[in-house]
Amino acid sequence: MASSMINGAENLTLARGITQKGLGFSGSDFHGKYFPRVNLVSSARIFKATRIVTPKCSLSASRPASQPRFIQHKKEAFWFYRFLSIVYDHVINPGHWTEDMRDDALEPADLNNRNMLVVDVGGGTGFTTLGIVKHVDAKNVTILDQSPHQLAKAKQKEPLKDCKIIEGDAEDLPFPTDYADRYVSAGSIEYWPDPQRGIKEAYRVLKLGGKACLIGPVYPTFWLSRFFADVWMLFPKEEEYIEWFQKAGFKDVQLKRIGPKWYRGVRRHGLIMGCSVTGVKPASGDSPLQLGPKEEDVSKPVHPFVFLLRFVLGALAATYYVLVPIYMWLKDQIVPKGRPI
Image (cartoon, rainbow, N blue to C red; front, top):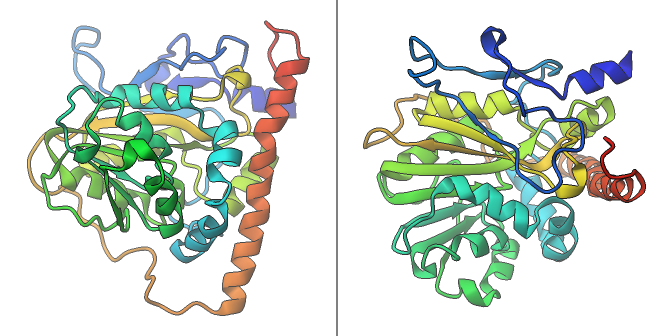
C-alpha cells in the first residue's frame, strides 16, 4: 500500500483530467536527458479558449511554504554557508548540481546575446555563473549573494574576474526597476523566508520582455525525505513555483525538470536542483502584486540558544541530503540498466 502510494505520487497529472505523456517520474527513461517542459499557458490551437493549466501532484503533503525551516532563516543560512563554502564546489555540486544539469537548466533562459545584462541572484561560488558567461560577456554579469564566504570563492575563478560581485538580499535587490535583460537564480530560493517576495523582486528588476530563470529543489514524496526536507530548508512543489511566478505577473511560465542522470527519473526523495522555471515580464515597472511586511526581520535579535539549536538541527537534516545522491548513485551502479530504481 505504502509503495503504491509513493510510486503513484511520481506521476504528474494536469488539471481537468488532462494527462501529458512523457512526464512520468518513475522508470528508466531519464538517462541524463532533461524532462520535457511543462508549458503552463495552453495554446489556442489546441484549446478553444486560452486557460491556465496547473500541474498537481497526486500525493503532495500540505505544509505552509511561508513557515521557515531551520536553515531557511537568513542568519542560520549565513553561518551554514560560512562552513559549507569550504567544500561546496567539491562535495555538494558533484552530487546535486553537475555541469550537464546546469547547462540544461540554463537553456530556457535564452542567453543568446553576449551584451545582455544578467543578474545571478544567490550566485554563491559562481558555479552557475560559469554557465552564464559561456553565453554572456562577464563584464555584463552581476553576482549577488548574502554570503561573503561564498562570493570569495567566486572571485577566485578566472572566467568570472570581470563580473560585478556584490553582497545583497534576494528579497530586496539593490538594482533599479527595469534594469536587467535576464534574471538567474540557482539553488537560492530554498533559503528565502518569503519566496513570493523574491520572485516579485525578479519581476521588478527585469526590463520589458526580460526573462527570469529560477532553478531550485522539488518537494519529495517519500515520507522520510519529506521529514528532513521540512526540517532543513524550503523544498517547493512544482505548482508552487508556477503560482509564485504567475502572481508576480510573469507570462509564458514554463517548468523544465532536471536531475542527475543516475536518478533515472526517480524523484521520490526530492532534488536540491530539480527544476528550472522561467517567465517573461510583459510590462515595464514593478510587479502588480502587493505584499505586506517581510516574513523575517533580520534586525531583530535572536536568542543564542535558539539560534544554535536551529543551526545544529538544520545541519543534521542537511546531512541526509548529502547521503541521498550517494545512495541513488549506488543503486544506479547495482540495478541493471533498463530497470527502475
